[in-house]
Amino acid sequence: MKKIAVFVDVQNIYYTTRDVFSKQFNYRLLWQELMAQGDITIANAYAIQRSDDQQHKFQKALKHIGFEVKLKPYIQRRDGSAKGDWDVGITIDIMEAAADVDTVILLSGDGDFDVLLRKVREKYGVTTEVYSVASLTAKSLVDAADVHHKIEQSLLL
Image 1 (spheres, rainbow, N blue to C red):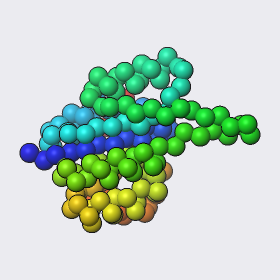
Image 2: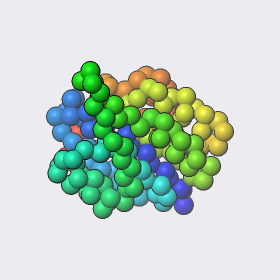
Image 3: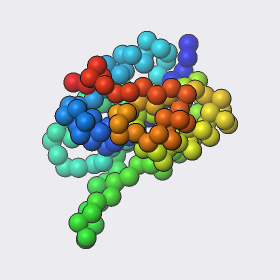
Image 4: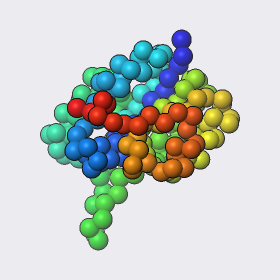
């Protein structure tokens, strides 16, 4: 059975599905689809920690589905801008997992991950897949993945 590792850039998926479709992503449906393809050995969801009841409820739902939820504090800068980026953490986890799985699946449209996907395919021979909202996805990320799954209405709540 194929071993699958899934990595979710929660903020990216939340904002892109909201901005394009005004809907939320259906993580439970994704999980069911992936379980039909193989054994999910790693499933990480990377989010920003906020003191918000809706966020806590959402994170609890992700854990119930089977994701390990990794949280990073939300940092509000003096100039009003905010910081809460998980790119390095996602990259480290994918690099570590790639040696032990057949497929790496990334949910993000962030072009910063294109080099990462190329590297893990080259070094470990894994298949790389990306789920993202097509219109808000970097072309370089689509080109770097073996398979690009466009998030459309069928994967939304």
